[in-house]
Image 1: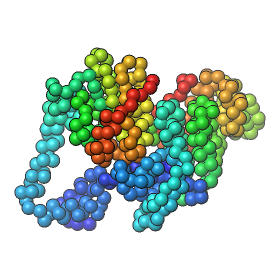
Image 2: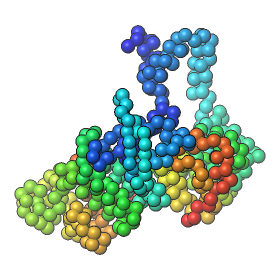
Image 3: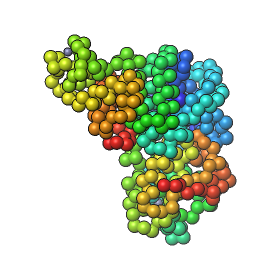
Image 4: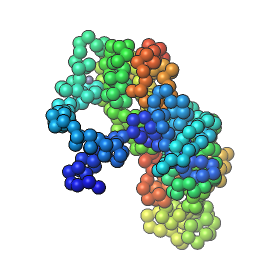
Length: 236
Length: 199
Ligand SMILES: [Zn+2]
Ligand SMILES: [Zn+2]
């Protein structure tokens, strides 16, 4: 479940990313009443099994079974919580069309949240890896090795969000960033899911990488993520 | 669409929280058929509330003066503050008669996805109140849902180093609900059974 919005006195509109039906919005009636049996199960971060009934404008939620409630594990740690919020918002924004199946985004989000909860890696790294990989699934994979214009393999020393990633010296555009070699290595590892390399990275590279990923994401989305500025980075 | 002023009324009512187009229409026609004196009273109260009611300079609760009635009351315990999200939570807790201290109304809960961060709430004002050492206990009574819990986590960590007792309402409050919907008995029990937050 991605988002809950208050509706009327006691209802909520919930947004879910489903395995087979893409992003779905539905009404959950009476869930803010403390007597509601499904209210507690329908919170952002919850991994749930849901049954819908057909409604006039929006479908309604009739049954909810909890598979995992990642929220309970995340709220106790502010950096992991804020990283998770950015993941939920990204999943919503990168699934532009409602009800367009996108099983890869679904699996990526579930995997990302599980990694946050099990605390295997730094939450900032988990978030950044999730961001680049979900951008890639959405068809906007940034290039961290090959030059985004001519394709010649790196390592390169320039990065340009508008051009789509790394640029060679020939194609370097004015206003490009000049990240360190270690930063390019980290970015590549985050996209590939190479945790051995990512875990070994230094805080300077992590800071630079997350800045570039945020800039790239915001450029692709046109309207930036609301939650990203609130993410608390441990090493920053 | 209705003519002129009737449609204006429906439009205005439709902008209220929780009022959809259908309800707006129903309320509008209720107003049209109501006794003129009743309508006048409603209109006057609406104007009066905007004129008279302000937010307490100390705790952020709704108030008819610079300070609210609770902050002005000398019988309230000055050493305890209960932190809530909204003024309506103050009302809910007052009903339980379990709490004799004063409040601090944050004006919402931290919700990054809605663009609400710590700086958008009255957290700085809370830190100022805690600075002079009078307050020895802080009870965090944010809603028992995700945003409320995250806000409690943030506050507990921020306030931990100040060395006062920080407690959170006992579980038993149904998760996912709004505090204002909790019945008095449950809320009262949550109050007396509050647990200290480790930091
Ligand atoms: Zn090139
Ligand atoms: Zn007050």
